[in-house]
Length: 454
Image 1 (cartoon, helix red, strand yellow):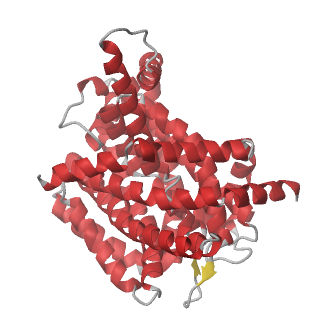
Image 2 (image 1 turned 30 degrees about the vertical axis):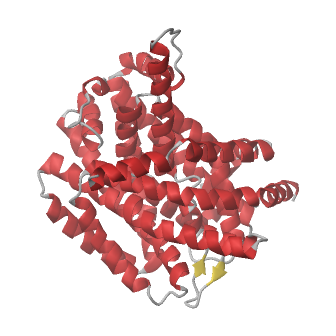
Image 3 (image 1 turned 90 degrees about the horizontal axis):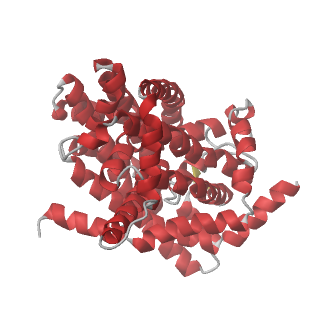
């Protein structure tokens, strides 16, 4: 079996019904057990996230709560919102966007739980920096010591692999394709520039990464949103039919009979499969990666930081992915999408329906900056997982050099293969992380209630 086909087969197995049920089931279970607190407290979470206190370094931690959030968003807002949405809507139909949004709503509860626990069980390493994440939660929080250590080791290994895939190669690949599509810049040249630029920044650690992220992410997010909304307004006459197609594809609202039932059912399953998978790729709720960055935040209360961290899922998927998907659906480019028009090219075509050639330029610039910020954010996640595996921070420089080089490798590979490898790494991270969250769900509920009563 060719390597590419083997990757696709493994991808289908990893993202089979069990993983999708585990992801959605955990989010639903936590939401109900907490009596919908994450949904009820979303306005409060957004308020404290945008407050001045979130930008100060009160309490233990390496960076402010806001900087930790923007670094998390740097690792999530990017190709998942621009390329991932387009890829999901081509592979799973327009209904994939609906499933992305559904998974995000329940994913906020999962994100709250994993980030809250990560801050609670973080520790200071030999270099005086915060080290945290699901691996520390597993090792220190689970009562079964042996199970905790096994899950922690597995999660760390999967996180390191994922950092090279979802956090690096897919991002470099999207940057290279966007710049080639718009400016005809050779992908190899783009790979070299990304490698050098990334290495120059990541040598400064989380403080250097957060400084860059806190500038790039907010500015580019607002700029991209404005452009996407202009595209939606420009195709406003197609918006109602576009929304209708999304819901019909997601839930099979047509009254069908006979042989068509099987086709419609398969269509709905594909929409759910790609919507949930790309939703996780976009907001990373359930993967545990965002919890690694959350552990670096300066805070005196782990529950409060959990609320701040969960807004990342809201901004990333419910806001940014929604406008991207609606812009694509309203533009009508899905009807002409084929094997050669996927990912970046499809989103560029959607923007060009209203903005003309400038639309392609806006998307290319957006992808380049967002994806580069994602590379920086994911380097920190992977580095901390690598640090846990080797038991010391002294070998982090080796990881940084290898991570930077992999950007060049990703820039020169095919989009489909890179996405497939990334999906596999994502799915493998999900399993140990959610097992830990479920085993500690009583603790999550208890701490959340205590915070409400304080």
